[in-house]
Image 1 (cartoon, one colour):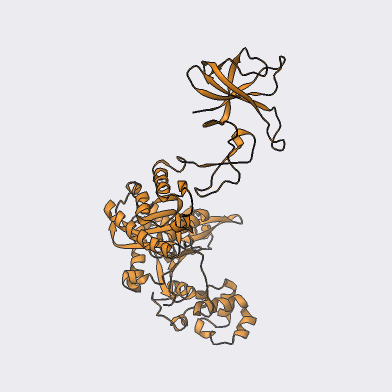
Image 2 (tube, helix red, strand yellow; image 1 turned 120 degrees about the horizontal axis):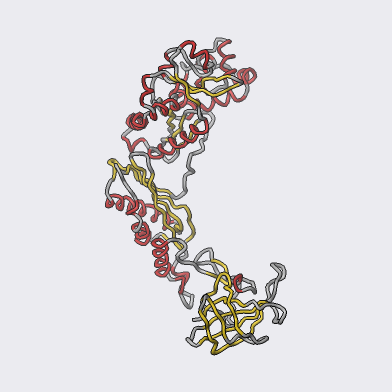
Length: 499
């Protein structure tokens, strides 16, 4: 199947937007203008103004001399550039590959999509109907090349170029249909070459000498001798599945059925390739142009349909179908190889390698958030708060063993809390200490354990740590900062709790 491209011409889309915002402007001639060298130049005129002889490039003062009632508004190029991007995103419901063609056009790669609308005519009719419903005037055409589709949408009197017929259909069109520079078009007209048919048979060498290589490139792109690529508004994910709907879906059951079908297709493909997803996004394109989406993540690559569906199912209630959803897209944003169960048979203990445990963690994370579960690994630092690091994944292996030769608290505070110690004895643990207003009497104590910080990471006093147990049986990990000295105020801190 050959390539088929759709070009959408939104010639009046900026003035159309003003009309959408202010319906009263439908029957009024108005223009958009911006300052240029001390005067206001018209950048776009609505259809009524153009019918009265006002065109882009005209000075606003001259236009008002012709039409005293002419209304003018300030043009907003940056805003309309973003608006064009939004319209391109709206077109993703018709094809996964959509690009903008500034200042007033869109390009769709309709290859393999038109059969979903029972042919190219209905495909184009549906696109045009959608834009007109939004309030925009459009001309559009479909052809084998981007250049031919662009030319026919703006200068042709038909919308469907038959496959492999673009050369013959371009012949009666003017030179500007090839997207040429204005000065090149003017030179062609002065030479009497007023249609593509007048110069298409002239030897290429002569055309190149007279009009330059860009002229030849545009001609070859239009007729299909040189391939032209487009940059999609959203890059196509390698692992993406789409499900268009003949009728808009408005129920949770319908959404679940669509999700199940997409998961089955995507998971079957990943299973054949020995891969699984880590992050997936389920997008629902509504009839009103709004996109609803939910996202899931897994601790280990998975293509388990039942498990993945369960992760999405908990979030389906957040999708608001409104007037209906017409397109579902499932994207696997992060794909990794799957470690098969057979490769784990030689391990003595499954632990975190148990798929059921990983799936349980996935469900907890999906319900309570990505920060609800964290895994830590030992890090090569002496300072206790630096001796652990957050694991990047559940499969990440430690690069250094856990320090187990000395007691360490079950709960380590991220920042030590200051405590007040009464009647301290030099180089001995305190007998009493007060923490957050509560006085603790020490029954048992062990220590000290001196810990220095790395000199290349910071400077400061060393720490002498003690393990204390109070009269209630609670056990604490405290330390004194620096050496004991009568002339130096003692600084004591609580750094953790034992079980």
